[in-house]
Image (tube, rainbow, N blue to C red):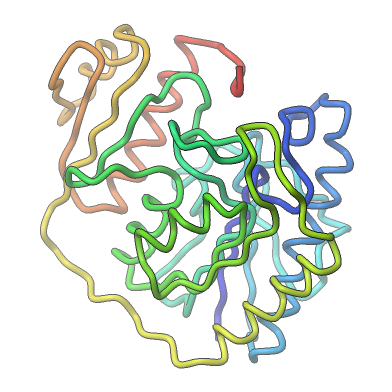
Length: 276
């Protein structure tokens, strides 16, 4: 059984502030260790369910957060950037399941460290007219590749967002949002036991591959900056719906890859830190 783990940081056990998740933050090094411990709990659960191949993709920010020597030796790590598929780099149709560790709710939600990919610049994202953030877009991309998302961990708002997108996904709340930078924390040992048990249980049950549709989808992104939207119109296939909103059509994995290009363009034009 081949398992793919995509690991973000905002939804990791104990972390609530930019200082916990950004390089140079006063608690970032502790956050890195917490990230490894949550991921390792998921790895142990996968092994208990019979996984024989486990890939972990560091999917947060600089994508160099997970310390390789702190990762469970049964897992291989994809680290660094740029990556054509960003948070889903290395995911392939022959994986049996995806585990999302440390995920967070989308921009505009009152979840811990909520945002959609970039913090400042992205106001809203829609996939086929449905509001979406990192959770929904990861799920839709995995589904388009024929791979089910089995488990998601994060705060309670992230878990709710996942359940609203796909109620069959097992979720583990490791903290409970009080505001964007405040939460009631689940005790670390308890949270990691819950992650391990949820992954083991979910992967031990029959996994149903999602049906793959060949119909094109539409990805729409509303930016805070009209300059970003205007610049993106130079990319073939990108159209505008207003001065700050662009969209493109295609198969979901290709749209996910294209969206990564859009973000690199936006980053080159704005240079604003997230979470302000």
